[in-house]
Length: 129
Image (tube, rainbow, N blue to C red):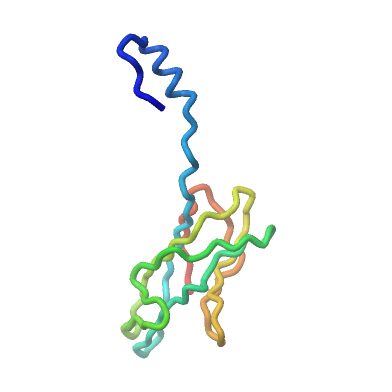
């Protein structure tokens, strides 16, 4: 959209601005995770194949970013007996989604899985893994 001309009135300029449609911003879902390691030091990591699954439509929102946890093939050391926090950022879920799962899809047992997460208006969640 070109800048308003000097001769345009403020009202005309405001009308032009109102008619501009901006592209949708990329929606994201933020999941803050708490991991309890037990009595021994342990190692954790997240696989890039982790996603959110809309339980109604089957839509999968891929993992976009991980904070404070290594991504496969690397590992994060977790001290014994101390809860460990990390954050996962996913692509947005469909607007119609009301219930979803967090699934770490890996080729062996032991992947993170949190089922039946109820959608909220902020799309920011706290879960235990």
